[in-house]
Length: 343
Image 1 (cartoon, helix red, strand yellow):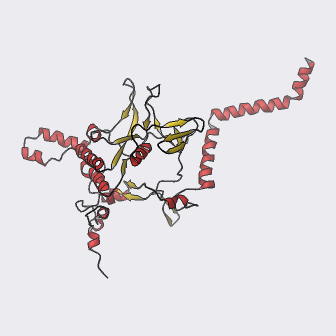
Image 2 (cartoon, helix red, strand yellow; image 1 turned 60 degrees about the vertical axis):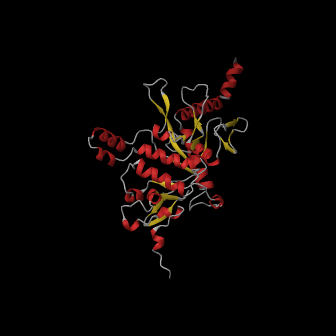
């Protein structure tokens, strides 16, 4: 017994430091300090060590020189200023036109990061008014429901070889049994048979999104029988023409997901992977004092006002109504080309 006491006394400082370290680490882990540090080290490796792969601040132009098949159409300040109709933009006169213009311009896939899971309110009001009005002549002046026109545009696009992908999300209603369901676009749009993909974001504890999911399961699907793919995966599926029989496969030894010919390194055994692009949105502009830097430029980006601008669409500013989109559409010549004088 004396030897035990003597041993403890001789090692007391070591035992105390060990116990204190374990207690301190446990407390720090309990309050998520290590999670925060790990996220910031992740940011440091991307931002300071490697740097962005794209944009004007990229140190290595390898990725830029490869080019990209992705083009962003944005609802930006120019769209708010020039669009012929106010936001939220009608589906029949705006979004249907966007789909038709992009289809004629040769887009292989059109992906919408916009929710269409509720009927268009304006069209519902007009339809209700049409049901109540007594004049048949007035009824003929009321336009068709925007959802129907939008659905027809999607069906036409698919018929001509352009796939359309629309986002969905996992929604929860505690009054339902089971409570979770997929919030899909309205029936008039779904009748066109577009692809759909989830947009539920993965947010880290500090509010940033550093990871992206391949898909997800409904909470009640305890046997994991059906994975709903995310919007990006569905865009890959549409772009490469993969059939519905192609499934995601997980190699647990290599921690790699396989989808078609793509190998995606996962974060552990989960359904998510680290986002390779790092930086602000493509249109983000730095401002340092009086110096304005160009947009970041991860992907080529255009305003919605440009994509909608054809001969039959009148923008709010006549001087800027140059039929910009017509230059990409077969058989159409924008007006500004006729204005070029042969010097």
